[in-house]
Image (cartoon, rainbow, N blue to C red; front, side, top):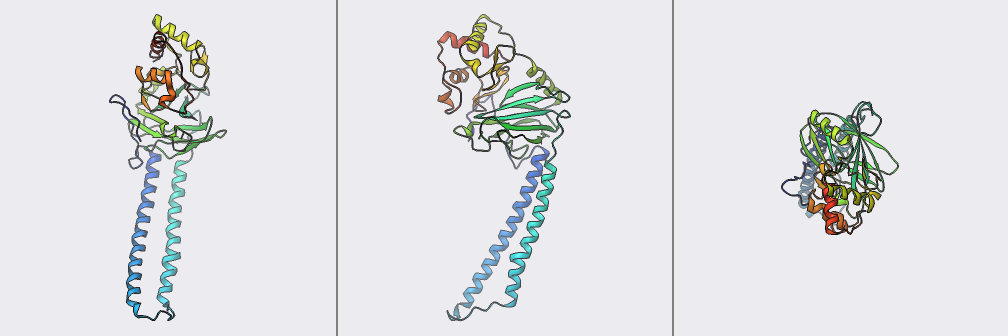
Length: 330
Ligand code: CUA
């Protein structure tokens, strides 16, 4: 099911049959090979079944207790069609599967490629970016990521709570995020555009509302985005926004969220340093606009029941100030 996004925020491309990168292409070809092979086998089995049924009808004159003669030829058919041919087919398919596994293995080394650490949370994704040659985390974002088109990117996956599965159908196969374990693989998008993927391992009440949105952009655009994401939060620019920042740091928000450059450093919830640069809220559930953001702040449980965001009570002016501050976090 697709979340109700609006005209300004489209749902990303998500189609295993229309791969947009080498990993997904490899998986799609293997899938087609298996589908066609299994389809041919199915047609053959049905054909044999029809022949057998016709023969049985012709033999109906046979007395019920007369022994059933299995001719020599029939035995040969059983040995070939029941054992030898399946063994050959399965061996060939196994060979292609191993070939695909090898092609999909071997992510580039950390330090040599852009590395994205993906951390699964109930019910959102955290992404930490590391750039080549720098062991420090350069930027942290949530649920939305950019990648340079045509580049192989290293992905390291883990989870903060239960098992989730990271999957962008047009780009790569599923990879679980498991607590206390680091899984590694790589992704590459060969086509510019917006891709989307659901969490692919049941993880609780809001498993169905846990989307990743990935935009493949030209390298220059990616670098400009990285430079912006690397920065600390923009300062509050109006009096109202300054009051909003005070509310954020003193009325509970900062207990779970961090905004770099402000005294808010908890990472229980998504990093909000560049909240206003994101297109969606609630891990791809709804467009990031003032109305949805205020609904989320006041009563996230009414929107995404079971998420860890508690309800907050603010009067109209406080809410206005807080929204003015958050909307300035480009
Ligand atoms: Cu996270 Cu399912």
